[in-house]
Image 1 (tube, helix red, strand yellow):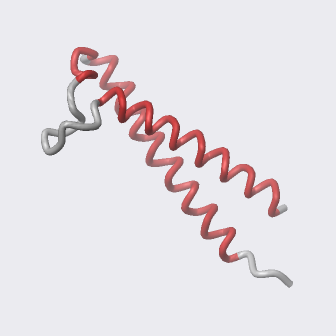
Image 2: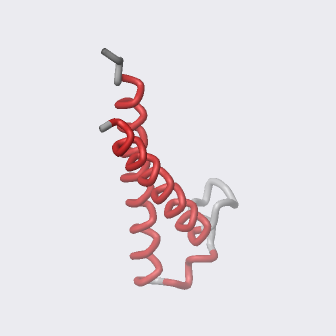
Length: 78
């Protein structure tokens, strides 16, 4: 009988990262539709980097890769 707790924990982390990074990407997409002029501006006034467009691209990459990792773990664990 094997212990699946580490795999389930990793699946939960990957699901959470996929969800919140996808939400960040959706925010940037809606922001681009409403006022696309701000895409080149920094995401926050606290730091000069990342810009809104960079943040959106990083969110999409994080969402895709974590969702892919989660699906791979699900398919391997049964």
